[in-house]
Image 1: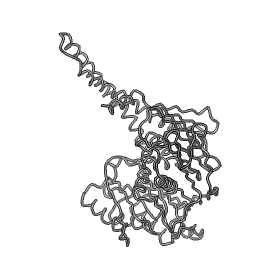
Image 2 (image 1 turned 45 degrees about the vertical axis):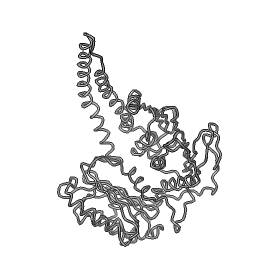
Image 3 (image 1 turned 60 degrees about the vertical axis):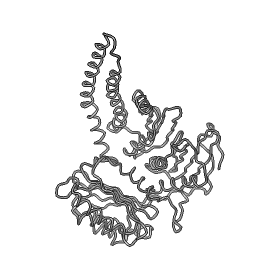
Image 4 (image 1 turned 90 degrees about the vertical axis):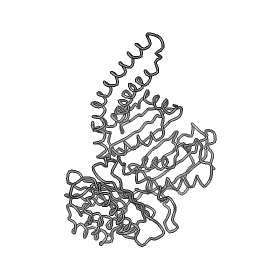
Amino acid sequence: MDDVYAKFIERMNPTRVVIDNESCELATIIEVVSTIRQGILLEVVQVLADLDLIITKAYVSSDGGWFMNVFNVTDCDGNKVRDDGILDYIQKASDYSSSIFHYFLFVWLVYLSSFVPRSPPFASEISISIVWLSDEAFYLASTWFMLHVETDACCLESMRGLTGGMPSEEHTSIELTGIDRPGLLSEVFAVLTDLRCNVVNGEIWTHNSRAAAVIDVTEQSTGQAIEDPKRLSTIKQLLCNVLQGNISFMTPRITISSSGVTHRQRRLHQLMFADRDFERLEDVEHSSRIHVCVLDCNDRDYTVVSIRSKDRPKLLFDTLCTLTDMQYVVFHGTVITERMEAHQEYYIRHIDGLPVSSEAERQRVIDCLEAAIQRRASEELELELCSDDRLGLLSDITRIFRENGLRIRQAELATRGGKLKDTFFVTDVSGQPIDPKNVDLIRQQIGQNILRVKGNLSLSPKFPQEMARSFLFTNLFKSRSF
């Protein structure tokens, strides 16, 4: 009953979103206020990340049962957000919740009407009247809900199709995790081509000798999701053989599904975390450009997490994904970016209400947050492939990469209207920058107009080895180290 009451209170206070394009000269200010619930901060940041908005500043507070958040955002070019479609989408994300509230409010009235006492002579008439009015309201609410809310929902889903999630009734989603090695992606695409599976969307990450992928495929003959159980079993077995390779001490994980909506980047974080890519390998050099401090704040029973790293798109999303996967709740936080450097600070507790309580747990938080930032801190050469889509094209492209000594570190795959637009982040097989002559040779084989070089991401500046233990919330709390 407490859970039902909490949900009802949430519906009584729907999320409020205020978009301000006047107060700040350099950015659009988005203010979000709602009742607090687990995961809401990540949901809001995920919407902004999916729209490719750059968060330059953020302030988070969620004490007292309320969630209050302010974001300063720009578009990819560093300008204010002026696109009406994007602003409308952000606003509708709030209106959709409000619309559902009104629908459930009518349902709640129907439920309450069943408890009206009927013992007095007039009570039955009152009860019948209330029930009739409630049924009438229920009918009107249902009709309005179907016409109004589902229209908004369709709009939201169409926008999500352009961002991180797609309804998988239209395709079959394949999730892969295993040990990374040169040429792995080429072998995966070769198997899918032999099985007449067309790759329509996907994303691949590699980090710390692990690889994870979420790939959406369709049946070549029908263009629809693959439904034959025997065929799905064959696909899974052959892909498992590819991922296993000559490695016998680790078993790859493969999941094939055809229902629900998958947010690929959110799912990749979960897959990498489950595969424990945060565990440090002895032969892998530790990055000196990411500094994470986990400190104790005894006065308020918080743990303070301070992060300094090179700034990049979706950095806040990646950090919050990992904190959520580790079952930590952010009560206060601030994010400030300046001169290509990002400062993040969070006051957190575990979902059970306790702060970090041991040195081992503190080190695990540090390792996991560093891994979250490194997973797509792409400083490799970026190649963009634009072409008409056809079966086996990705197999051919990745085979050429492999034959010319390129190793794919990260990839984003997208198909729209028969056109393929893919992005690859690549190094040589040893992880070093690629010889420009080799790139020119590859472009000649594939086509100068088909494969474009988008540029090598500049190296981030070196930070001091010791991170200053100063907090952006210094005047609010006092803290001491472990």
